[in-house]
Length: 427
Ligand SMILES: C[S@@+](CC[C@H](N)C(=O)[O-])C[C@H]1O[C@@H](n2cnc3c(N)ncnc32)[C@H](O)[C@@H]1O
Image (cartoon, rainbow, N blue to C red; front, side, top):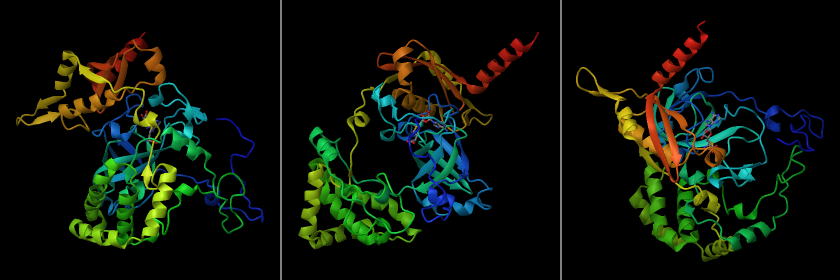
Protein backbone atom coordinates (compact mmCIF):
# COMPACT_ATOMS: atom_id res chain seq x y z
CA UNK A 1 0.00 0.00 0.00
CA UNK A 2 1.36 3.43 -0.86
CA UNK A 3 2.13 5.93 1.83
CA UNK A 4 0.40 9.28 1.62
CA UNK A 5 1.37 12.63 3.09
CA UNK A 6 -1.27 12.33 5.75
CA UNK A 7 -0.55 10.31 8.85
CA UNK A 8 -2.31 6.98 8.57
CA UNK A 9 -3.65 7.16 12.09
CA UNK A 10 -5.50 10.37 12.92
CA UNK A 11 -4.01 12.30 15.83
CA UNK A 12 -5.31 11.21 19.18
CA UNK A 13 -5.73 14.79 20.42
CA UNK A 14 -8.14 17.39 19.11
CA UNK A 15 -7.33 21.07 18.26
CA UNK A 16 -8.51 21.99 21.75
CA UNK A 17 -5.98 19.63 23.25
CA UNK A 18 -8.36 17.07 24.63
CA UNK A 19 -7.64 13.44 23.96
CA UNK A 20 -9.96 11.64 21.65
CA UNK A 21 -11.07 8.23 22.70
CA UNK A 22 -10.00 5.49 20.28
CA UNK A 23 -13.56 5.02 19.08
CA UNK A 24 -13.76 8.63 17.94
CA UNK A 25 -10.62 8.34 15.88
CA UNK A 26 -11.95 5.20 14.28
CA UNK A 27 -9.47 2.92 15.96
CA UNK A 28 -11.26 0.08 17.53
CA UNK A 29 -9.88 -3.10 18.89
CA UNK A 30 -12.04 -5.81 17.45
CA UNK A 31 -12.81 -9.12 19.00
CA UNK A 32 -14.36 -11.78 16.82
CA UNK A 33 -17.83 -12.73 17.96
CA UNK A 34 -17.11 -16.19 16.57
CA UNK A 35 -15.35 -18.14 13.86
CA UNK A 36 -16.99 -19.53 10.76
CA UNK A 37 -17.17 -23.28 10.39
CA UNK A 38 -17.65 -23.68 6.68
CA UNK A 39 -17.58 -26.25 3.92
CA UNK A 40 -14.59 -24.46 2.34
CA UNK A 41 -11.22 -25.27 3.81
CA UNK A 42 -9.12 -23.06 1.52
CA UNK A 43 -9.48 -19.96 -0.61
CA UNK A 44 -9.08 -21.93 -3.82
CA UNK A 45 -12.52 -22.88 -5.08
CA UNK A 46 -14.37 -20.79 -2.51
CA UNK A 47 -17.08 -18.83 -4.35
CA UNK A 48 -16.28 -15.19 -4.96
CA UNK A 49 -19.71 -14.13 -3.80
CA UNK A 50 -22.39 -15.83 -1.74
CA UNK A 51 -24.88 -15.90 -4.60
CA UNK A 52 -22.69 -18.27 -6.62
CA UNK A 53 -23.41 -21.36 -4.57
CA UNK A 54 -26.58 -21.42 -2.48
CA UNK A 55 -25.69 -24.84 -1.05
CA UNK A 56 -22.46 -23.70 0.56
CA UNK A 57 -23.17 -24.04 4.26
CA UNK A 58 -21.57 -22.72 7.42
CA UNK A 59 -22.15 -22.33 11.11
CA UNK A 60 -21.24 -19.47 13.40
CA UNK A 61 -21.16 -20.04 17.15
CA UNK A 62 -21.20 -16.88 19.25
CA UNK A 63 -18.31 -17.07 21.69
CA UNK A 64 -18.91 -17.21 25.38
CA UNK A 65 -16.05 -14.77 25.85
CA UNK A 66 -18.18 -12.16 24.08
CA UNK A 67 -21.48 -12.92 25.77
CA UNK A 68 -21.88 -15.21 28.77
CA UNK A 69 -25.14 -16.37 27.30
CA UNK A 70 -24.60 -16.39 23.54
CA UNK A 71 -28.20 -17.45 22.96
CA UNK A 72 -29.40 -14.13 24.40
CA UNK A 73 -27.51 -12.22 21.75
CA UNK A 74 -29.28 -13.97 18.86
CA UNK A 75 -32.76 -13.70 20.32
CA UNK A 76 -35.14 -12.72 17.53
CA UNK A 77 -32.62 -13.29 14.77
CA UNK A 78 -34.42 -16.44 13.64
CA UNK A 79 -37.22 -14.23 12.37
CA UNK A 80 -35.02 -12.91 9.59
CA UNK A 81 -34.32 -14.82 6.40
CA UNK A 82 -30.89 -13.31 5.68
CA UNK A 83 -28.06 -11.77 7.65
CA UNK A 84 -25.11 -9.55 6.82
CA UNK A 85 -21.84 -10.94 8.04
CA UNK A 86 -18.86 -8.69 8.63
CA UNK A 87 -15.67 -10.67 8.76
CA UNK A 88 -11.90 -10.50 8.53
CA UNK A 89 -10.05 -11.82 5.49
CA UNK A 90 -7.65 -13.51 7.87
CA UNK A 91 -5.96 -15.58 5.16
CA UNK A 92 -4.95 -12.69 2.93
CA UNK A 93 -1.36 -13.53 3.72
CA UNK A 94 -0.25 -9.91 4.02
CA UNK A 95 -1.77 -6.62 5.04
CA UNK A 96 -0.68 -4.63 2.00
CA UNK A 97 -3.03 -3.70 -0.79
CA UNK A 98 -2.97 -1.74 -4.02
CA UNK A 99 -5.14 1.19 -5.05
CA UNK A 100 -5.97 -0.54 -8.33
CA UNK A 101 -6.77 -4.22 -8.66
CA UNK A 102 -7.77 -6.68 -11.35
CA UNK A 103 -11.05 -8.26 -10.35
CA UNK A 104 -11.53 -11.70 -11.92
CA UNK A 105 -14.72 -10.57 -13.62
CA UNK A 106 -12.73 -7.90 -15.50
CA UNK A 107 -10.31 -10.58 -16.70
CA UNK A 108 -7.16 -8.52 -16.33
CA UNK A 109 -8.40 -4.94 -16.57
CA UNK A 110 -7.61 -2.77 -13.57
CA UNK A 111 -10.05 -0.75 -11.55
CA UNK A 112 -10.02 1.06 -8.20
CA UNK A 113 -10.03 -1.19 -5.16
CA UNK A 114 -13.10 0.51 -3.75
CA UNK A 115 -15.11 -0.29 -6.87
CA UNK A 116 -14.52 -3.98 -6.25
CA UNK A 117 -15.13 -6.63 -3.61
CA UNK A 118 -11.49 -7.67 -3.55
CA UNK A 119 -10.30 -9.17 -0.24
CA UNK A 120 -7.11 -7.07 -0.44
CA UNK A 121 -8.26 -3.75 0.93
CA UNK A 122 -6.87 -1.26 3.47
CA UNK A 123 -8.90 -2.85 6.23
CA UNK A 124 -9.27 -6.53 5.41
CA UNK A 125 -12.98 -6.60 6.12
CA UNK A 126 -15.44 -8.68 4.13
CA UNK A 127 -19.18 -8.33 3.86
CA UNK A 128 -21.41 -11.23 2.96
CA UNK A 129 -25.15 -11.54 2.78
CA UNK A 130 -25.98 -15.11 3.77
CA UNK A 131 -29.19 -17.04 4.12
CA UNK A 132 -30.10 -17.76 7.70
CA UNK A 133 -31.16 -21.40 7.88
CA UNK A 134 -31.68 -21.74 11.62
CA UNK A 135 -30.61 -20.49 15.02
CA UNK A 136 -29.96 -23.02 17.73
CA UNK A 137 -28.80 -21.78 21.12
CA UNK A 138 -25.90 -19.48 20.31
CA UNK A 139 -25.24 -21.10 16.93
CA UNK A 140 -26.30 -19.58 13.65
CA UNK A 141 -26.61 -21.89 10.64
CA UNK A 142 -26.04 -20.25 7.29
CA UNK A 143 -26.04 -21.09 3.61
CA UNK A 144 -24.83 -19.27 0.52
CA UNK A 145 -21.49 -18.28 2.01
CA UNK A 146 -18.17 -17.30 0.49
CA UNK A 147 -16.03 -17.52 3.65
CA UNK A 148 -13.48 -20.17 4.41
CA UNK A 149 -13.39 -22.30 7.52
CA UNK A 150 -11.95 -20.42 10.50
CA UNK A 151 -12.89 -16.94 9.24
CA UNK A 152 -13.17 -14.53 12.20
CA UNK A 153 -16.55 -12.82 12.27
CA UNK A 154 -16.79 -9.29 13.65
CA UNK A 155 -20.50 -8.73 13.51
CA UNK A 156 -23.79 -9.92 12.15
CA UNK A 157 -26.77 -7.77 11.32
CA UNK A 158 -30.21 -8.69 10.05
CA UNK A 159 -30.84 -8.01 6.39
CA UNK A 160 -33.83 -5.72 6.01
CA UNK A 161 -34.81 -5.22 2.42
CA UNK A 162 -36.41 -1.86 3.13
CA UNK A 163 -33.15 -0.47 4.45
CA UNK A 164 -30.60 -2.48 2.54
CA UNK A 165 -31.89 -2.92 -0.96
CA UNK A 166 -32.86 -0.24 -3.45
CA UNK A 167 -36.13 -1.49 -4.82
CA UNK A 168 -35.63 -0.99 -8.52
CA UNK A 169 -32.75 -2.68 -10.21
CA UNK A 170 -31.89 -0.81 -13.34
CA UNK A 171 -29.57 -1.30 -16.25
CA UNK A 172 -25.99 0.00 -16.01
CA UNK A 173 -25.67 3.73 -16.49
CA UNK A 174 -25.48 4.52 -20.17
CA UNK A 175 -22.55 6.63 -21.35
CA UNK A 176 -24.57 9.86 -21.42
CA UNK A 177 -25.75 9.54 -17.84
CA UNK A 178 -22.38 8.35 -16.68
CA UNK A 179 -20.70 11.48 -18.06
CA UNK A 180 -23.41 13.64 -16.60
CA UNK A 181 -22.88 12.10 -13.20
CA UNK A 182 -19.13 12.58 -13.44
CA UNK A 183 -19.51 16.28 -14.23
CA UNK A 184 -22.19 16.94 -11.71
CA UNK A 185 -21.17 19.56 -9.17
CA UNK A 186 -21.33 18.58 -5.58
CA UNK A 187 -23.10 20.82 -3.12
CA UNK A 188 -21.22 22.89 -0.59
CA UNK A 189 -19.87 21.06 2.42
CA UNK A 190 -22.34 20.41 5.14
CA UNK A 191 -20.81 21.81 8.30
CA UNK A 192 -21.77 20.00 11.41
CA UNK A 193 -21.39 21.38 14.88
CA UNK A 194 -18.61 20.37 17.24
CA UNK A 195 -14.92 20.87 17.69
CA UNK A 196 -13.85 17.47 16.59
CA UNK A 197 -15.27 17.35 13.07
CA UNK A 198 -13.13 16.30 10.13
CA UNK A 199 -11.34 19.35 8.74
CA UNK A 200 -10.39 18.25 5.30
CA UNK A 201 -11.02 15.79 2.53
CA UNK A 202 -14.43 14.94 1.29
CA UNK A 203 -15.86 14.12 4.68
CA UNK A 204 -18.86 16.29 5.38
CA UNK A 205 -19.80 16.54 1.71
CA UNK A 206 -22.90 14.88 0.56
CA UNK A 207 -23.64 13.99 -3.01
CA UNK A 208 -26.96 15.52 -3.89
CA UNK A 209 -28.32 12.47 -5.50
CA UNK A 210 -28.11 10.58 -2.28
CA UNK A 211 -30.26 13.05 -0.41
CA UNK A 212 -33.79 11.90 0.09
CA UNK A 213 -36.59 14.05 1.28
CA UNK A 214 -38.04 13.66 4.74
CA UNK A 215 -37.04 11.33 7.49
CA UNK A 216 -34.38 8.72 7.56
CA UNK A 217 -35.69 5.17 7.82
CA UNK A 218 -35.10 5.01 11.57
CA UNK A 219 -37.15 8.16 12.13
CA UNK A 220 -40.16 6.96 10.26
CA UNK A 221 -42.92 4.81 11.49
CA UNK A 222 -43.17 1.55 9.62
CA UNK A 223 -46.41 2.62 8.06
CA UNK A 224 -45.08 5.98 6.86
CA UNK A 225 -42.13 4.24 5.34
CA UNK A 226 -44.25 1.55 3.78
CA UNK A 227 -46.54 4.00 2.15
CA UNK A 228 -43.77 6.33 1.03
CA UNK A 229 -41.60 3.59 -0.36
CA UNK A 230 -44.45 1.99 -2.15
CA UNK A 231 -45.44 5.31 -3.61
CA UNK A 232 -41.95 6.29 -4.68
CA UNK A 233 -41.09 2.86 -5.97
CA UNK A 234 -44.00 3.05 -8.37
CA UNK A 235 -43.22 6.57 -9.34
CA UNK A 236 -39.47 6.48 -9.74
CA UNK A 237 -38.81 3.31 -11.64
CA UNK A 238 -37.29 4.55 -14.88
CA UNK A 239 -37.86 1.39 -16.83
CA UNK A 240 -41.27 0.57 -18.06
CA UNK A 241 -40.52 -3.10 -17.62
CA UNK A 242 -39.97 -2.54 -13.89
CA UNK A 243 -43.14 -0.56 -13.54
CA UNK A 244 -45.49 -3.47 -13.95
CA UNK A 245 -43.72 -5.62 -11.41
CA UNK A 246 -42.65 -3.17 -8.75
CA UNK A 247 -45.90 -3.13 -6.82
CA UNK A 248 -45.99 -6.87 -6.47
CA UNK A 249 -42.34 -7.04 -5.55
CA UNK A 250 -42.74 -4.51 -2.81
CA UNK A 251 -45.81 -6.21 -1.44
CA UNK A 252 -44.14 -9.56 -1.63
CA UNK A 253 -41.17 -8.34 0.33
CA UNK A 254 -43.38 -7.07 3.00
CA UNK A 255 -45.41 -10.21 3.16
CA UNK A 256 -42.21 -12.18 3.66
CA UNK A 257 -40.98 -9.87 6.31
CA UNK A 258 -44.15 -9.42 8.22
CA UNK A 259 -43.55 -12.43 10.45
CA UNK A 260 -40.13 -11.21 11.36
CA UNK A 261 -41.45 -7.87 12.30
CA UNK A 262 -44.26 -9.17 14.38
CA UNK A 263 -41.66 -9.97 16.96
CA UNK A 264 -40.10 -6.50 16.80
CA UNK A 265 -41.41 -3.00 17.22
CA UNK A 266 -42.58 -2.66 13.66
CA UNK A 267 -45.98 -3.82 12.60
CA UNK A 268 -46.65 -3.81 8.92
CA UNK A 269 -50.01 -4.10 7.24
CA UNK A 270 -51.01 -7.50 5.95
CA UNK A 271 -50.91 -7.91 2.16
CA UNK A 272 -54.57 -7.27 1.57
CA UNK A 273 -54.61 -4.22 3.82
CA UNK A 274 -51.50 -3.15 2.01
CA UNK A 275 -53.19 -3.18 -1.34
CA UNK A 276 -56.19 -1.28 -0.06
CA UNK A 277 -53.93 1.23 1.62
CA UNK A 278 -52.01 1.67 -1.53
CA UNK A 279 -54.82 3.06 -3.56
CA UNK A 280 -55.60 5.58 -0.83
CA UNK A 281 -52.03 6.74 -0.68
CA UNK A 282 -51.65 7.10 -4.38
CA UNK A 283 -54.52 9.53 -4.25
CA UNK A 284 -52.94 11.38 -1.31
CA UNK A 285 -49.49 11.98 -2.71
CA UNK A 286 -48.90 15.59 -3.65
CA UNK A 287 -48.29 16.26 -7.29
CA UNK A 288 -45.55 18.72 -6.40
CA UNK A 289 -43.52 16.10 -4.57
CA UNK A 290 -44.03 13.60 -7.33
CA UNK A 291 -42.93 15.89 -10.10
CA UNK A 292 -39.83 17.16 -8.32
CA UNK A 293 -38.83 13.61 -7.55
CA UNK A 294 -39.38 12.56 -11.12
CA UNK A 295 -37.39 15.50 -12.45
CA UNK A 296 -34.56 14.80 -10.07
CA UNK A 297 -34.55 11.14 -10.96
CA UNK A 298 -34.55 11.70 -14.67
CA UNK A 299 -31.74 14.26 -14.45
CA UNK A 300 -29.60 11.53 -12.94
CA UNK A 301 -30.67 8.90 -15.36
CA UNK A 302 -31.61 6.74 -12.43
CA UNK A 303 -34.17 7.09 -9.71
CA UNK A 304 -32.87 7.94 -6.27
CA UNK A 305 -34.09 4.60 -4.97
CA UNK A 306 -32.60 2.61 -7.81
CA UNK A 307 -29.31 0.80 -7.92
CA UNK A 308 -27.01 0.48 -10.85
CA UNK A 309 -23.77 -1.36 -11.52
CA UNK A 310 -21.13 -1.07 -14.20
CA UNK A 311 -21.53 -3.39 -17.13
CA UNK A 312 -18.50 -5.47 -16.14
CA UNK A 313 -20.39 -6.64 -13.09
CA UNK A 314 -23.58 -7.40 -14.94
CA UNK A 315 -22.17 -8.72 -18.20
CA UNK A 316 -18.68 -9.82 -17.29
CA UNK A 317 -16.33 -10.64 -20.15
CA UNK A 318 -15.70 -13.91 -18.31
CA UNK A 319 -18.22 -16.43 -19.54
CA UNK A 320 -20.10 -18.96 -17.45
CA UNK A 321 -18.63 -22.40 -17.98
CA UNK A 322 -20.32 -25.64 -18.82
CA UNK A 323 -19.44 -28.21 -16.17
CA UNK A 324 -18.94 -31.89 -16.96
CA UNK A 325 -18.07 -34.93 -14.85
CA UNK A 326 -16.08 -37.86 -16.24
CA UNK A 327 -17.68 -41.27 -15.55
CA UNK A 328 -14.88 -41.84 -13.07
CA UNK A 329 -15.76 -38.67 -11.16
CA UNK A 330 -19.46 -39.61 -11.18
CA UNK A 331 -18.52 -42.97 -9.65
CA UNK A 332 -16.30 -41.26 -7.07
CA UNK A 333 -19.21 -39.12 -6.00
CA UNK A 334 -21.49 -42.10 -5.51
CA UNK A 335 -18.98 -43.49 -3.00
CA UNK A 336 -19.87 -40.63 -0.66
CA UNK A 337 -23.23 -42.27 -0.14
CA UNK A 338 -23.98 -45.62 1.46
CA UNK A 339 -26.68 -47.41 3.40
CA UNK A 340 -26.49 -48.06 7.11
CA UNK A 341 -27.47 -51.41 8.68
CA UNK A 342 -31.15 -50.39 8.67
CA UNK A 343 -31.07 -49.55 4.98
CA UNK A 344 -31.13 -45.78 5.53
CA UNK A 345 -29.07 -43.76 3.12
CA UNK A 346 -26.17 -41.93 4.75
CA UNK A 347 -23.46 -39.74 3.28
CA UNK A 348 -19.94 -39.03 4.39
CA UNK A 349 -20.42 -35.29 3.92
CA UNK A 350 -20.50 -32.91 6.83
CA UNK A 351 -22.49 -30.10 5.22
CA UNK A 352 -24.11 -31.54 2.08
CA UNK A 353 -27.17 -33.68 2.62
CA UNK A 354 -26.84 -35.81 -0.50
CA UNK A 355 -24.58 -36.62 -3.41
CA UNK A 356 -26.95 -34.62 -5.59
CA UNK A 357 -26.42 -31.52 -3.45
CA UNK A 358 -22.66 -31.97 -3.57
CA UNK A 359 -22.77 -32.29 -7.34
CA UNK A 360 -24.91 -29.15 -7.68
CA UNK A 361 -22.51 -27.21 -5.44
CA UNK A 362 -19.48 -28.35 -7.46
CA UNK A 363 -21.25 -27.29 -10.66
CA UNK A 364 -22.09 -23.87 -9.20
CA UNK A 365 -18.51 -23.25 -8.12
CA UNK A 366 -16.93 -24.34 -11.40
CA UNK A 367 -19.49 -22.67 -13.66
CA UNK A 368 -18.43 -19.32 -12.18
CA UNK A 369 -14.80 -20.07 -13.16
CA UNK A 370 -12.99 -19.91 -9.82
CA UNK A 371 -9.53 -19.52 -11.39
CA UNK A 372 -7.49 -16.40 -10.83
CA UNK A 373 -6.92 -14.20 -13.86
CA UNK A 374 -3.29 -15.28 -13.95
CA UNK A 375 -4.20 -18.95 -13.91
CA UNK A 376 -6.91 -18.45 -16.50
CA UNK A 377 -4.46 -16.79 -18.86
CA UNK A 378 -1.15 -18.50 -18.19
CA UNK A 379 -1.77 -21.95 -16.74
CA UNK A 380 -4.60 -23.25 -18.86
CA UNK A 381 -3.24 -26.78 -19.05
CA UNK A 382 -2.73 -27.17 -15.31
CA UNK A 383 -5.00 -29.25 -13.09
CA UNK A 384 -7.13 -27.30 -10.63
CA UNK A 385 -7.81 -28.65 -7.14
CA UNK A 386 -10.20 -27.51 -4.48
CA UNK A 387 -12.13 -28.87 -1.51
CA UNK A 388 -15.76 -28.58 -0.57
CA UNK A 389 -17.02 -30.22 2.57
CA UNK A 390 -15.27 -33.64 2.69
CA UNK A 391 -14.75 -33.77 -1.07
CA UNK A 392 -11.44 -33.05 -2.72
CA UNK A 393 -12.05 -32.21 -6.36
CA UNK A 394 -9.62 -32.42 -9.28
CA UNK A 395 -10.61 -30.81 -12.55
CA UNK A 396 -9.30 -29.10 -15.65
CA UNK A 397 -10.54 -26.29 -17.82
CA UNK A 398 -11.02 -26.24 -21.58
CA UNK A 399 -12.54 -23.67 -23.90
CA UNK A 400 -15.83 -22.73 -22.25
CA UNK A 401 -15.99 -25.74 -19.94
CA UNK A 402 -14.65 -27.28 -16.75
CA UNK A 403 -14.38 -31.03 -16.38
CA UNK A 404 -14.31 -32.82 -13.04
CA UNK A 405 -11.84 -35.70 -13.17
CA UNK A 406 -11.80 -37.05 -9.62
CA UNK A 407 -13.74 -36.49 -6.39
CA UNK A 408 -11.97 -38.04 -3.43
CA UNK A 409 -12.72 -37.99 0.25
CA UNK A 410 -10.45 -35.50 2.01
CA UNK A 411 -9.54 -38.23 4.54
CA UNK A 412 -8.01 -40.38 1.80
CA UNK A 413 -6.02 -37.39 0.55
CA UNK A 414 -4.80 -36.56 4.06
CA UNK A 415 -3.88 -40.20 4.68
CA UNK A 416 -1.96 -40.33 1.42
CA UNK A 417 -0.13 -37.11 2.27
CA UNK A 418 0.58 -38.41 5.77
CA UNK A 419 1.99 -41.64 4.39
CA UNK A 420 4.17 -39.77 1.89
CA UNK A 421 5.63 -37.58 4.60
CA UNK A 422 6.20 -40.62 6.84
CA UNK A 423 8.00 -42.37 4.02
CA UNK A 424 10.16 -39.37 3.22
CA UNK A 425 10.94 -38.95 6.93
CA UNK A 426 12.05 -42.55 7.37
CA UNK A 427 15.80 -43.18 7.02
C1 LIG B 1 -14.07 -11.71 -3.36
S1 LIG B 1 -14.23 -12.01 -1.64
C2 LIG B 1 -15.83 -11.38 -1.33
C3 LIG B 1 -16.22 -11.52 0.08
C4 LIG B 1 -17.44 -10.75 0.48
N1 LIG B 1 -18.62 -11.25 -0.15
C5 LIG B 1 -17.25 -9.27 0.19
O1 LIG B 1 -17.80 -8.77 -0.79
O2 LIG B 1 -16.57 -8.62 0.97
C6 LIG B 1 -14.50 -13.76 -1.54
C7 LIG B 1 -13.24 -14.51 -1.65
O3 LIG B 1 -12.46 -14.23 -0.51
C8 LIG B 1 -11.66 -15.33 -0.20
N2 LIG B 1 -11.83 -15.58 1.24
C9 LIG B 1 -12.89 -16.09 1.88
N3 LIG B 1 -12.68 -16.14 3.20
C10 LIG B 1 -11.43 -15.62 3.39
C11 LIG B 1 -10.62 -15.39 4.54
N4 LIG B 1 -11.04 -15.68 5.75
N5 LIG B 1 -9.39 -14.86 4.35
C12 LIG B 1 -8.94 -14.53 3.12
N6 LIG B 1 -9.67 -14.73 2.00
C13 LIG B 1 -10.89 -15.27 2.13
C14 LIG B 1 -12.14 -16.52 -1.02
O4 LIG B 1 -11.17 -16.78 -2.01
C15 LIG B 1 -13.41 -16.01 -1.67
O5 LIG B 1 -13.53 -16.47 -2.98
